[in-house]
Length: 178
Image 1: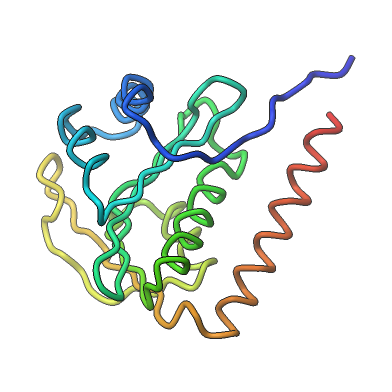
Image 2: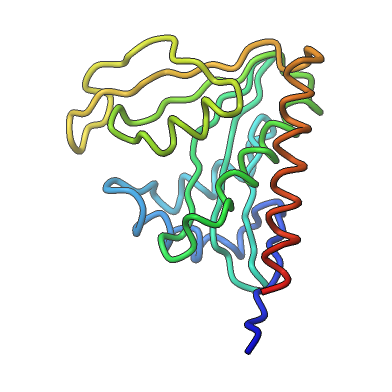
């Protein structure tokens, strides 16, 4: 018996998506963003917010600011029921591509010190730990690792991105067969 899994599409976040985004936010983070923060971000010309859609259902989201030559990833989350299917990786690729399109040279982010899965994903895409922000997360007092991917227009970085993009495409082609 074959199970049909709808394909994942990455699309710009719209205000009509915010209820689903907020629901994922509450399931993933101990201190979710206020709904009004997302509304504000959607009107910020320096911001890019995306959703991952499986059929009609939103299963993840991500956002970043792009100011001058630097992108700053502000959030990335996947519905816990859909984690492990490379949706977060697809969102990360889309953010990097948007940063490239808008001519950012570098991308930075903060990630919880104990979130090794996310740190490993970011390392896979060339992010390196650059600093610690002690007691950054108010809810737990946990520190944040500041990670940085530099010179994202360099041919070596672009080759890395292309390689990972091909791997993701192959993953989804195989998944479509099951």
